[in-house]
Length: 429
Image 1 (cartoon, rainbow, N blue to C red):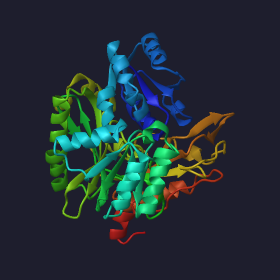
Image 2 (cartoon, rainbow, N blue to C red):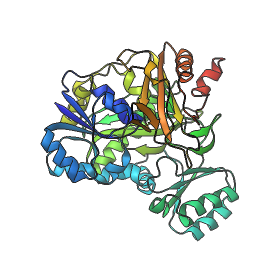
Image 3 (tube, rainbow, N blue to C red):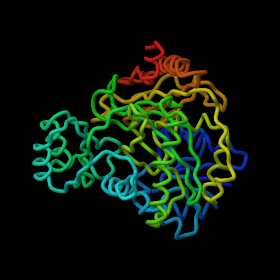
Image 4 (cartoon, rainbow, N blue to C red):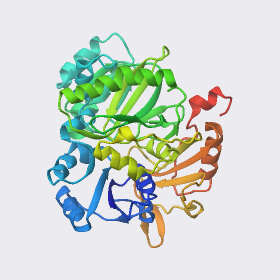
């Protein structure tokens, strides 16, 4: 069968790399893909859902996998289902769980899913008045709509809160996404990610992971799309996972059924695990995480095409995931200036050392790269994901950063402390 992967980031490279290993997959098409994805599939630029549908018919593509959130929020699944084409993901209404923080928070409130207390504002003056009266800081200010993971502000006082409101609602830094905002209480604990496959009736947990969203070491500075990740996340032990299932997943799926939300895809749970081991939902995403996918999928031994097909056909209950006991840690190499205005067009050196064979200890997934004149060049904020296996996270850390030392491009920036919460506890750096 031919498969199409929609997207151009590190997540999509990993997804295409994983599914291309299936003996059942004849060819992979990447829309639009990136410089590195040309090694696992054919990259093609298509500018509309109609063009994608025409291409799917022309090439007799049997399954479409959507990586990023924007096409899902715009209704790509609705368009493909109308043409009876197999595609993984929620419809436009289901995608509101990510596309609207307001929708997600109100949904959680309706179904008793643990999340931080919140208020909603569509007027900047009213938001500022409420924040001025607020007694408990820090607080969190979030854009309602999609902002590539950057529309969240943890504010320590009213001055910082006012700055966030101005950027979102007055200056419209993220456009219409900031026309409404959510202000919620700050939750203390340790963050983790749990992704769940859901086929409309049954569900299957993927290995846990932990992202590092802040640009600076020690988790300081502005939010990014993610500067690195590791899997598994020790904070998600069996007891916590049972709580996640009972208190979050079960009521979430019951609510989706009650509200008739179409869903054949990935439910991403962005969680805060408090000191008493209670899992709280920070956010929902309606697709695989990035950079979490790059350290989760390689740990799964199953044929990902078979998993994806079972997801589409409603047969997840027939599967059992096989996961390597090895840990995996990934480091994002970013362009100078990211997550603000960043540079492009810098030649990348050292990539020939990483052939990305199944079973390799170190894997390299491209994000913002382009192939020109026989070389790779930077073409985005997050450029590369350097991921390594290890018998534990400490060994994976060492291997990943040794690999990082062999890669270079002008202005290359990366955090040197991915995994620091776990490694600190073990006496590592």
